[in-house]
Image (cartoon, rainbow, N blue to C red; front, side, top):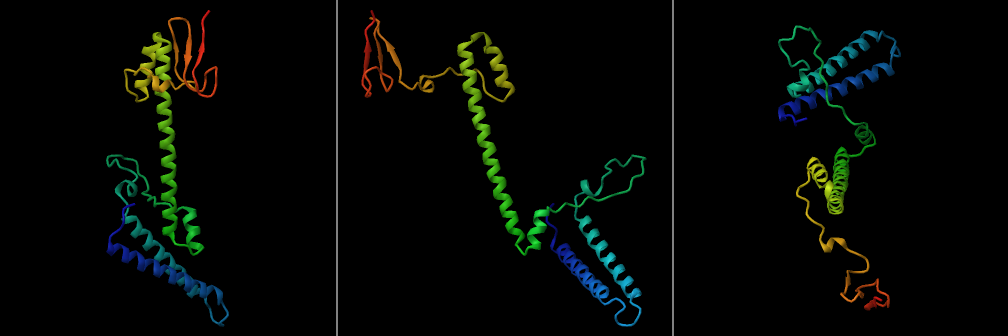
Length: 209
């Protein structure tokens, strides 16, 4: 809801003060009911009427600051159906009410909610990027291993917001644990890295027979 102007803010503040004063007067009248030796029922009835008027005034002021989409539930003026105009005021979270009741600053609640939403957005963004990368890697692997399915893979990539054509898998992305194996013309296999036969990070050679 958009912030209200200064004039409306002062008016609402005064109306809320009047409502609180009416509640206090009503509390006094109820606590001393018939204890003064005189009839207090008319006074109590008057205080209830004053409280009702104060609450209606606050409701009218709050309703006047709402956008037309909320204050007018029937946007079709040509409709012949007679409906009762009801105004839906913004709801206040129960947690925020508990903050105020416990004497805590409601701005703390706002700051905590902003931090929570920011963390949730970052987590959701991380999951989204992980699925995007997984989709691209899976599509490249499937297109390379089964060329007859390349058209179907590209159609799925387009439907999920990806880019085609699918780039081939590079040697850097293959990333084998033992390094790249090279097969010589004489039938020997050389392996660089940790997966060799001699161990210790050296070079292993297996003579083909």
